Amino acid sequence: NVHLVEMHADGFIEKAWADSYNKNQDLDCGQMSASESEADAARLSLEEMAGTFFLHFLAGGISLVVALFAIFQSNRTMASAESPEDSDIDTGSVHSTNHKDVDSKADISMVLSDLQRQIKLIREEQLEQRFLLEDNQFDGKNEIHRSTQF
Image 1 (tube, rainbow, N blue to C red):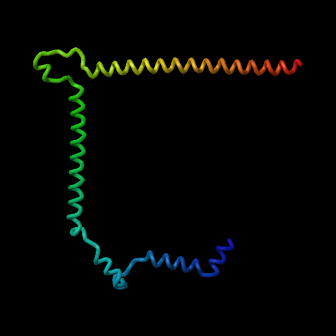
Image 2: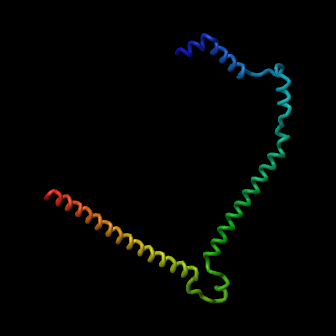
Image 3: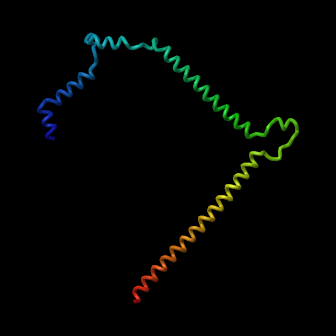
């Protein structure tokens, strides 16, 4: 409150309100200074900016078409890679399995067996650690019991 009273006594509040009113009041064209009219003269109108807007929308449209074409092409190549080859169907030859599928199944089975082996080793290590911990706790109790007996 002390600061507010001091600002009111100094006239700061009245000056701040007056500045705010002057900044927000409507401007009269006759009162504009020369620097403001020069700034307004440097602004471009909508007709003068039409070429810039046209180029902007044209570039945006071209980029949209290119992006959609790239998405279409990637979907098309993925679909053709998943489907069997048409040339083998035309000649009447029959594929028993795809070589990529055989390789991937073999890779998956190798990874699976490796993971199972690692899980088994981890379980064995955990059991060994548990037994060692129990042995250490048991030995600690025996040592305390032995030291109290003598």
